[in-house]
Amino acid sequence: MAAIYRADGAAKNPMLSLNPIKRCYFERPLFFNGDVMTISGMLQLAASTLVFLLAAVGAKHWAISPTFPKLAITLILYTIGNLIMLRLVREFGMASAFTLSALLQLVAINAIAIVYFGEKLPTTQLAGIMLAIIAVGLITFPPSE
Figure 1 (tube, rainbow, N blue to C red):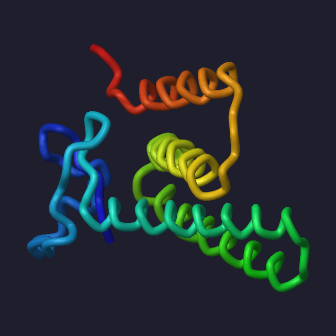
Figure 2: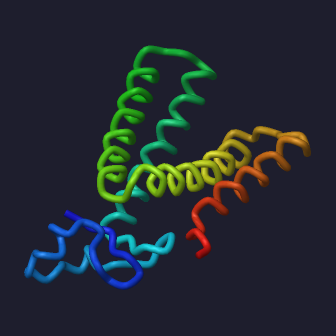
């Protein structure tokens, strides 16, 4: 099980610090939001983002021409993405997991909508998306002391 470490290297969960077994490569810590995120956590975040992107594309295809198979695939993908997110929430906390996921999805889904589906957004909506990206990005910064 991956752990989050404080900047001083101590595990947040005291039971994890008692484990004398050396961590594998995928559990090496990376800095994240004042704490540290493991490589396995980053891979899980990437996997959930990819699954949610595929689900969003499926939802758009279903919206264009609704059929039951498209709906079923879309719902299955959203379910898989949420199951991965549940693991991330348990390991890294709700605020960290959902904030990073929201930021990644916000950028990627809008890019897919504009580039792949050719959606056109008015200037005010583009400004709103940029402000949302900035707002969610600011949330990821560690609190000042």
